[in-house]
Amino acid sequence: MNKKDNDYGTGIPKHEIIALAQCLLPEIRQFFDSEEGKREFEAWKAEQANINSSNNKITERNEVY
Image (tube, rainbow, N blue to C red; front, side, top):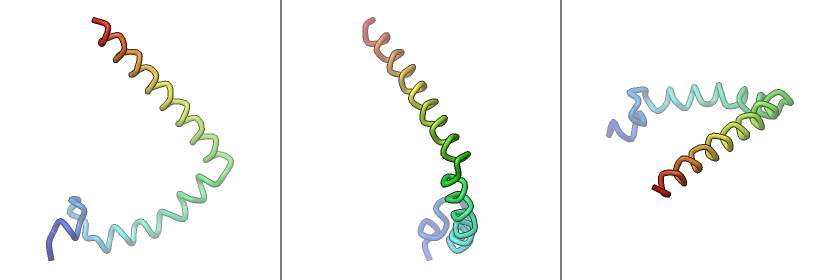
């Protein structure tokens, strides 16, 4: 079996990654479906928008010079 097909470059066997994902995914979904998760996601999106806006302003300033 090709290592690349087996471990996603992590050194962790594919079956262990799948088992971990199966354990974590329900908890992640539950969190993001909760009010707290929704608030945190909205806050993260606003933060990303600010970062992107700042990066765009820097790029625009650099293009002027």
